[in-house]
Amino acid sequence: MTGKVNIDHIFYRNPTKYYPTVDRAEGVYIYDRDGRQYIDGSGGAAVVNIGHGVKEIEKAMLKQASRIAFTHGTHFTSEAATDLAERIVRMCPPSLSRVYFLSGGSEAVETAVKMARQYQVDRGCPLKYKVISRWASYHGNTLGALALSGHTGRRRYYQPLIQHTPHIVPAYCYRCPFGLEPERCSIECADDLEKTILYEGPDTVSAFIAEPVVGATAGALVPKDGYFKRIREICDRYDVLLIVDEVMSGIGRTGRNFAIDHWNVVPDMIVAAKGLAGGYTPLYVVVAREEIHRAIKEKNGTFVHGHTYSQNPLSSAIGAAVLDYIRAHDLVRASADKGKYFLEKLKTLYRHPIVGDVRGLGLFAGVEFVRDRKTKEPFDPKLRLNLLIGNRAFDKGLITYPGGGGADGVRGDHILLAPPFIIEVAQMDRIVEILDESIYEISKEIS
Ligand SMILES: Cc1ncc(COP(=O)(O)O)c(C=O)c1O
Image: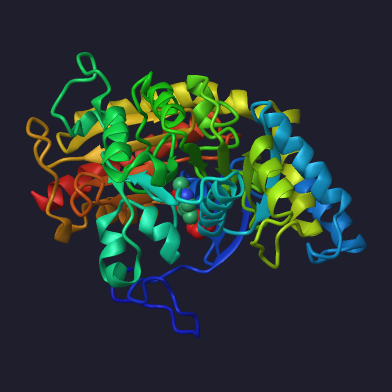
């Protein structure tokens, strides 16, 4: 499809690329207008967790739309929103009991940052404002969220516009920042948080934000057991809030309600999204500890923030229907069980010398590519290997979420996979088969 572009009025992300026109979708399949079928191996961008075209969601959507679709959050609350908040709180650890609704991930991350800051001021710690994040992370593309994101490629153009915020090393066992093996390390990457808090001055640090399993920038990076427990201890020691960004990893994606649950760590805030409405509407939330809500309520009385579509009844009803569907079909467990099979199957890709690491948790998996398996040297980013493989797979009817820059911000190639939780064994096999063929062909072409 090279050379062909779309002729219309849309400002595409990549105007040099040709995008087929989508027609409809059902289950794990998307169909374009030419009748081609694609397996949604990445659920878009880790969004579509219950599959496409679920009738129960369509019904809930129509039912709510026929009553009221929109009301502004400064005027009313709605049954749809209160019902959804209740369902979300039921999925969270007991101390996280207040849900703030939003309609974008970057917006939700920035909301968490502002909520942390207002909480610090309202509880009498006005010097605390800094938010520490990690390299090889993604928290969104708006300027505030981009400042926290640790992806050099995405930041470079906008560097003069983004505020400097402190970043620590990632928990990246395959490319340990300290050159250690996981069996022998003492989780030095977590201790980097303590060092940074001390350098910055603990009385100035408001929060630390991290994706429990890193998605877009590094391809399902799973930290070593004990990492988040240490992070929690450090945050507690220096009175710093722990915000987990579960925009991709939350709502069952890793086989637990939230990825942080794997390590029995309770954060102060969870940012959750994509899978929450499964692609049926834009719906994101910040879930905060009761104490954060109380401090703001008692001191200022108002959270000085707000977005127009927050809490709208239509999105809320859709979110509640998606969560009901997940529960009724035990889909979080399905993600855990199927994820084990999927990861094992993906490991057969090690037969290709350019496959350096295959990793994941639940139905959230990544395949990282290297020029040299021994030295782990990444490919030249100009080659755009992740796109070559992703595009070849797409041409063969498989949708993936390719990414780059994990190794050092610019170099590094991976493919992220996050299929719907309703996927069947034969469909997982087909995903791996297409990837296998694509990697084989591209390996040959570049050698
Ligand atoms: C972990 C994480 N946080 C935040 C975002 C930003 O979400 P949005 O694209 O809706 O702004 C993303 C998007 O992929 C993400 O993966």
